[in-house]
Length: 156
Image (cartoon, rainbow, N blue to C red; front, side, top):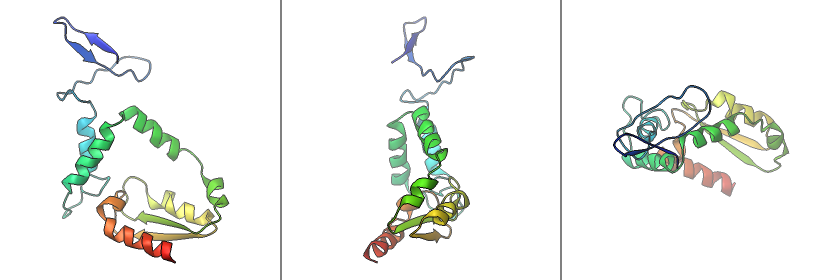
């Protein structure tokens, strides 16, 4: 783990994410510079908790925070870049089994038009189910509805 030592012999952990002019971010919580970020994202658009009248589920927020803190922001970013920049068209065309594509129409993270609707166009046995008003985190926040639909699809 890379550190620098300051005048009073305190060691400060740092992350090196590339080249160029260094930028130093200081955070009061020593666990991670990303700690507040993971709380903010989960409390907002990811699960749709930023909408008026929606009750935030603290267990869901803290679970997302736990998952985020298990990795680093750079690793998470690289993972998102890998799956968002990969063309899966040939893989989808090759799927020869019934496939259920589920998507919330209020997903602020991955819009349906650029993902679910494009996927269903190339799947040979695809079924698209769009959920009005549901967010990116619908499988967690709306688990009863999603699970019921999954079970129905499996039984059919």
